Image (cartoon, rainbow, N blue to C red; front, side, top):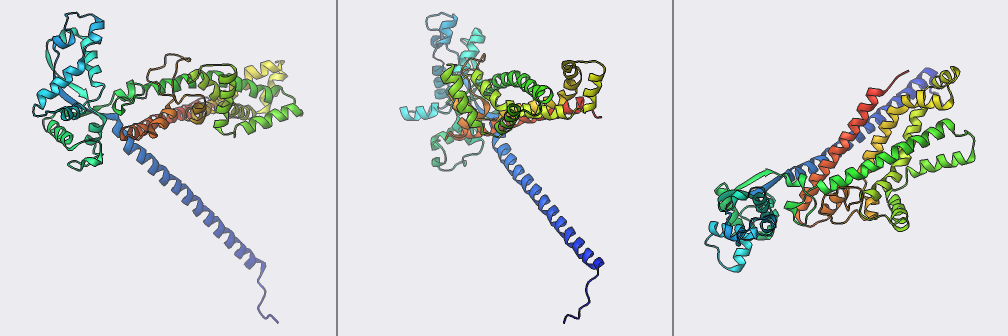
Length: 431
């Protein structure tokens, strides 16, 4: 027989409340730990990208005393553009290096010496002479772009005075680099080439301008097509379509499902429809924009429908009550009030499309394109695809530039999201 007195309802209620508060406390701690873990991982990720990428914004240059010898530039005395463009400016650089290091002899040693400079250095001299032909016959100190291995060495990727196996530099080359640095003929400058050039096989000459222009063309076309089509579809489904209809329900379900379809499926669809069926050119922003439009449309339709639903029904009833037609009610009252939400959803959808790589790979925008695209039908690549290509390269210089391109892409996406927040707060109306 149990002689213990039975607990009162107040005691049982107190124990129940105690357990409930303990569960709430544990749930709160779990949530805080999840958020803190996410923040720590995000901080580590961004820090690693920042620490690796900011170095790409600097490039090593070497100062050489270049004699613009008229016997090399214009041996026949002709100073027309064709002759100046075709001159052997590499010979001027080789002569300057030999004058600087006269002790270097032998074919192999000279070749190692010439590799201190980028293959793009002669083009620098060519541009200088084309811009000012009065340089011919003079001697100037010119800062020429250094080879990527020299740049990596100066940025500390290779241990100074270490074994040559750490990089592709030979011991003699590191000695010449140290000598140039001691004479203040080595300098790290802001890397304008990274922002003003297209892709290149040489890391020190590779830039993001071509990929950036390709992304801008593709995203511009995506916005021009997806926003009006998405808003029109949302207005029809929300305001004009019958509420109880099999086909309308089927369309709504499919739109919701399309928003969750992997992006590579849209790439396969674009490959089959735009390239194989319509025969549009590969590797162009035109096809890229059309594929991204397919991918972005469901997001814009869903966001636009949510914005339309947020408009109070009494605004519709008031408009109809004063004699407005249904079209006037939508265009003059409902649509202007829902437009901020629609713009926010469109910008977020476009920003998401900007970071997509898989659909662009399927339509050939992974090709090596050096030239800057001038239109929608010019061959181009996109910024996320460019990052993918550089990250896949074995050379350390490309890895550094891939991290810098990620920083540019993140900055662009932050600007787009900030624009969405500003538009929502500026035009948002409360009722």
